[in-house]
Length: 70
Image (cartoon, rainbow, N blue to C red; front, side):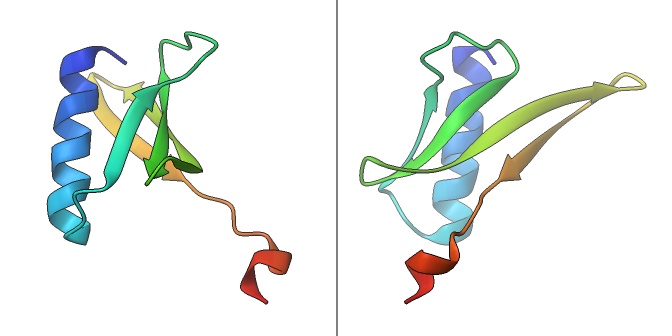
């Protein structure tokens, strides 16, 4: 994802969740189709860019470990 897409997603998520601590950052491996979703520096998930039939969408994948629920 390019910087403009990352910024737009970050603004959207901050507004949607009413949380200015949300950060969307490029992945360390320089993946062109994904970025990291973080809150207060904690990695929480990955956002993937998908282009299908000329339409672009972004998917947020977040895993929650059972041990984190206790």
